[in-house]
Image (cartoon, rainbow, N blue to C red):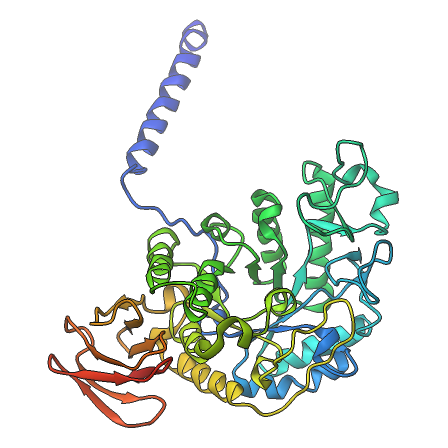
Length: 460
């Protein structure tokens, strides 16, 4: 007994040291580690996302009326349906007549303007029958002034220097007040509310409004708990690589949008800002991540301008790049109908539906993206490789290639006709011009004549 008592603790300590040493040897500090810990749903590999502003989507502005459009959206090539916030809207300090859907009165409610929970379930079921998925816009950062939580749990809210409820600082968001995420109870409540919609309505994930205004560890835990219910897809309205590690499949490519908009409107002298974006995206963001590329969304359309105002003659060129370049393309409802209006945000202002060349362009591009694995997303797709050309200041040229396919794209982001010569040999070979079905061959002597704002997509 004396021997055991005397040597028990030292022997235990030595054992721990040996175990730590073994673990240290197995954990090579120089060995690359996977930054992204989550797995994307397999169905997202070549998906297109489509944003539905339910209020403006149809004359009725209901889920039932929107459901009638689902076969059309399926034919367009849509996979993920993003519904803007579905909840009851606050009345206190409301903006406009109908208010902002981002001013949530009750996270467990359905806005009666749209229907009821059974109508939502029917919409989701029909989408699933057609092979599409539905994600809800989730406003975790703030609530309406008259959300019941203000009376039931007033301590869950952030306060200004006077001790009053506080809208998000520095923004003109007077119809909402911020929650306080230093409170564990807030995090638990919000997590349970999100799980409710996955469990009750079979929702397939969420788009997180101003995701960066909410602590990342909250989102990391939300993802874990949602995955216990079913595989989900998560989109963050934010541009940060850190959100990809454990919480979100996709983030906004805000910098891509800004670069392309400045180029097409003449605010940029050349393509350098676009080259910077692609360099940043390839170097800083993990390969196993997705970026959402777009030429319109509810914010851009309502507050900054239509796709025609923001991209002018370069609109089609921007759309082509949003689909064949790296990134998951977003279509904001009405784009495919050539909508040329800034839709009202706080009032009823339904979209006028019609056949339109923009819709045909999206349909053709999305079809190519789906069938050519080089254009898929995240680790499933091929990285864009720059093909140097003689007009680098205004012509973007690149190749995406894998074992199953190859795409060579050339886009003239200028008002001038260009005669382009390409260096290197990556693009050499025989192709089909995707938009004309003509056979084309490129070698060291090839020159491409391309009109102002024109684009060529060659497929091998």
